[in-house]
Each structure stands twice: as structure tokens, then as C-alpha cells.
Image (cartoon, rainbow, N blue to C red):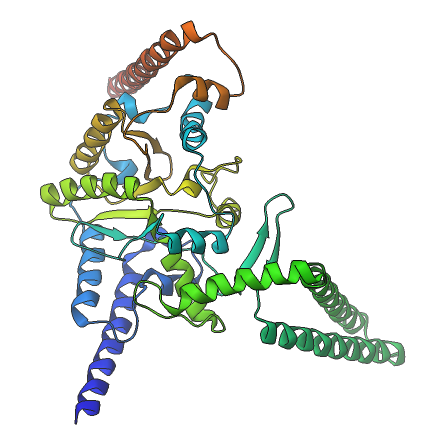
Length: 442
């Protein structure tokens, strides 16, 4: 009887998840650029999750997307505080964040292996997918089902990670793949050779198939060469197998969950959970902003990005121009997070921006309103801006110590003046447009 009730609860949970997926797929047109399979990871809950958790997720998505009856996102008429704009030297924004890393010299993850180590050491805090105050709205949307990899930042190459037994299976698969592809190519070539009376279109079709198979052989050969280079040396193999063991240990107990590294869906879900993390200092700032937003508007704050290893940042940069490829990207530090404002009204955006501007004035964060419907927020570890000398160094130049204070002040003044100038320019454009319309009416 107990087992029967448990089965019924699990069945109900699965049905509720299916309904939730359908709701989210219909409710997230702003994320249409993601692949169809990518939507599944927007709901990082297990099949046996409590109905209350699923219901909170569904309600939170609907609240974020709810029709306000007025313009939202970029369509809303807003006044952007100067604190959320660029400096006159646009490089300074990134330089400040790099300087914070230089000042504290903490470890940043190159790949998911490095991220796993930081999580296990307790340097990063894993966030729940949803609470009353915030919702992870697409965090990890580019995570793949493929095996975890060892990432070489200098070359950009990725070596798939396997256990010793899985490695043997992969080599056997490659051997079979080579044989099958070569047999298919030989067969196609023979057909082409004997097909003297074939039409030109048929010959072209056969040649195209041969070319396709040859490309597949080349890809498999490169894959084998990469495996040979990574696992061929005994010392190197011990290191790579150690990387796999690091992930395996985390997978056994990750925030009370277990993950199967041999299962593609489980791998992707684990990657999403790993990307759902921040350093405690950033988490504190995020929770403050989220609480204020929810208290004012009774909606959870949508967060679209948290920590990103260099490997994930590199892949994301192919589809997101805001994903910088500098040596130490802000998101790799675990101190940065992005707030998604696509569905916020002018009042909502103003509330969040005012809060962020105050935090920047207090020296606790660095913030920028980005073009792609985001506020990029970077929290300082000690709640204090990094030393100006380090900022200058991060800009790739030097300056006399006496001039540092005046340079900071001039940058801040310049930032405000630029924003003021932009507003005046917008006013002139509107006035010119109105005059043109009046002239046409006459």
C-alpha cells in the first residue's frame, strides 16, 4: 500500500512537471533562440520533486512573464542612472572587476572540473532554482548533454573525461566507427565506379555521400588523436582520470542529489546545477536586491546568469556578444550575476536601478545596464572598491600615485556628464521629430 501511494505521488509529480514544461515553453518567447532540447534544463527538478516546489516554479515563471498592460524592457521609457552607464574609457568597467580579482587572487574555474572543486571546498554556494524572492530564469541554458571535458584554455581544445572502463568503451566505439565508415565509403565508391549509366544528378548524390562520410572519418580521427594525446601518457592519464573522479565524487552527493555521469540528461542537469552558484559575497548582494524587488512588486527577481567557467564562457561567446573573452571574465569569479529586465515595467526597472545605483555609490558593487535586457552586477568581496593602482594596472597603463584620486573623480564626473548629454541629445531628437510632425500637419 505504501509503495502504491509512493508510485501515485511520483506519477502526479511527473504529470505536473510535464504541464509546467508546456507552460514555460509557451511563456518564454524571449528565449526562442535556444534549442528545443535546451528548454528542459530550465526546470532543474527531479521527477519525485514535491508538487509545492513545482507549483512555486510555475507561479514564478508566470509572475515574471505576466502582462503588465504597459511597455516593458527596452520599450519602457526609463531614465538610466549614470551609475549604470559606461565610463568615458569603456575598458574601465572590466578593469575594475579584473582588479578585484588581482587584489584577492582567488581561484577561478577553467572548466567544470575546476568548478566542482570550488563547490566541494565550499567557496561557492549553490542556489535553489526558485525561491519567493528570485528565480533562475534560463541559467545554464547553453549546457550540453555531452560528457564533461578537460578544457585547455591556451588552445581552446576540450578532452572528454571518462572513467577507465568508459575509456575502453570509447576506444572500442571509435574502432567500430572507423570500420563501418570505411566499409560504407568503399561501397559508395564501388557503386560510383560501376554506375556508368547513372544520371549526372545520381553521380553527384553519390559523391556528396562519400564526401560526407570522409568528413565523419576525419572528425573521428581527430577525436582519437585527442584521446591519445590526453590519455596516452601515464602521468597525464592519472591527471585526467583524477579530474573524472572529482566530478564523480560531486555527483554522488550534490546538494542532496545524485547524478549519473554516464547518462546525457543527468549530465546536463548536473551542469545546470553547477552553474547555479555564486560566492557568498555576491549572494548577499543578490538576495538584498531580490528581497527589495519582491517586497515592492510581489514578483521574484529573474536571474539569467551566475558563475561561468572559462570553458562555458568561451562557448557562450559564440551566441552572446556580451560574453567577454578576457583572461579573467567577471562571471568566472563567482562575484557576478545578471538580472533579466525584459519583462519589467518602467517603474520596476527604476526601482531596481535606483537600488543598484545606491550600492555602487556605497562602493559595494560595479554595475552596467547592458543592451541585451540585463543588469550586470559585480559584488566586491570586502564591500570596498579595489585599489585604484590595480585598476590602472588592469587597464594596461601606469599613472603617478598622486593622480589616481583625481583620475577616479574625473571618470565619475565624466560618466554623469555623458549620461546627461545623452538625455539632452534624446530630448533634441524628440523635439526635432515633433517639429517635423507639426510642419506636416500645417
